[in-house]
Amino acid sequence: MELKTAVAALAALAQETRLAAYRLLVQAGPAGLAAGRIAEALAVSPATLSFHLKEMAYAGLIQSRQEGRWVIYSAHYAQMTALLAYLSENCCADATEAPACCAPVQAATEAAVMAPPSEARKIHPAAH
Amino acid sequence: MELKTAVAALAALAQETRLAAYRLLVQAGPAGLAAGRIAEALAVSPATLSFHLKEMAYAGLIQSRQEGRWVIYSAHYAQMTALLAYLSENCCADATEAPACCAPVQAATEAAVMAPPSEARKIHPAAH
DNA sequence: TCGATATTTTGACCATTATCAAAATATGGA
DNA sequence: TCCATATTTTGATAATGGTCAAAATATCGA
Image (tube, rainbow over all chains, first blue to last red):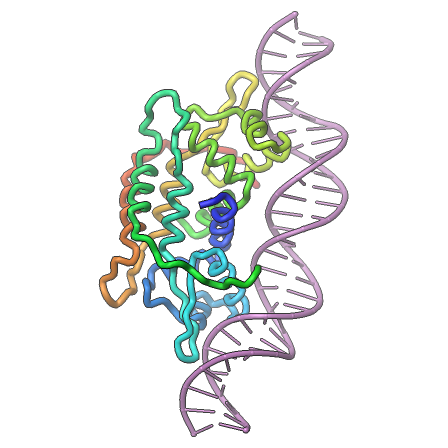
């Protein structure tokens, strides 16, 4: 993952409504949730939520599919695991003593990179 | 971790200079780096970097200590592991079928929460 | 104490972001 | 086709964020 990609993903999560929506989707699993149900659960206007969902989709954290007259959003787990790996990359590489400083972070990273490769994402190809 | 705390931590990382500085500190380990060395490595003005370091310290992601005439910054790993755990909390709780959808995220979380408890942080108690 | 180095703070400026109201688009059913 | 429901887009506005120059603070060594 590149610096700018990681910044985009972090920025997409760094807002209360968006983080709450993302967590809702993480908990909902692959089945996902319709946009309207998320707006309802979070008590935000559909227009505002749509703005936020678009932002997260653009950052690759969630994806959408049309299902009848609903648009279903779901978490894109691979992007999150890639972000986790990036955040702890080369942890303590420059430490003089061999430290246990970030053992948990390392363990998390190793678990994350075991994730099976995901199919190519083609979400919101339009420019921001 | 609470929603607002997580948003603050994510926002603290959602900026190119800050994320680059944070990664530098993660790689430097507990020994840390002087503010000036970070500014030098990233080619940003000391004043601007100071602004960014303060932001990350306030979010609990890094800590500082005075050492002679230098201020040494280092990563606060516990905050990051707490953030990782929060982001994958209750993953797929609502999925109808038992899915392997976020197994890697779950593994990462479990590794993260094994982190030893850190001493109480008292960084930059002043208001933002 | 004085000067040099290291870092932080302040104030100003410009760019980006979040929200809302209203209009536009898309889908399904009568 | 027409209407009702679901979602997105647009345009405006207020708030927040990032950078810079200059001044302020802190520490060390002479």
